[in-house]
Length: 175
Image (tube, rainbow, N blue to C red; front, side, top):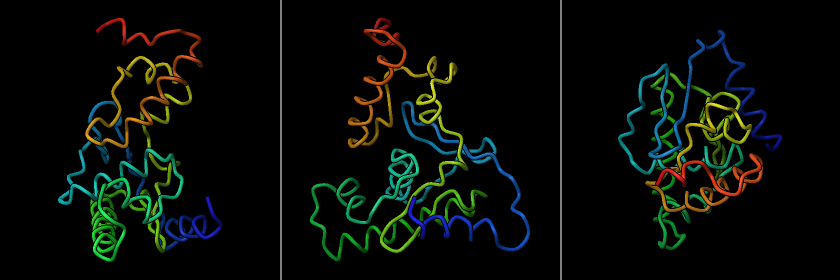
């Protein structure tokens, strides 16, 4: 995380009274959804939801405007119209999550955004740590509503097999 991004996270959590602790969780296996205290967050802008999903996919890494436009509005050209769509999606994602009680989870900075991965419980992140429950719950599907998720799915399958020391994931034998 860049120094500016770290400051943004620190400023978000460091203002006023301590925030009410909410449980924010993301489900990436299968269809993507995000929950606050067990209640699904309803996005009115589907690209805002996809932008949040892309940020989660990046595991807290910064997603630039250009990268988001490339993934969310392929094969559109990166022009002023695409930038306006991105800005609309980022504002919608930020407001939706704040209104749902997930302040500080989705962070926007000039020309980019990211997820504060430390503030979210995520099945994908747990799988990377070889959490037993996450390993058992993975059935070969990852954010299947988004074409860009296929690359991560292939990567998950590779690391899943190598870290678990198996030649084929359990879920493949069940098909």
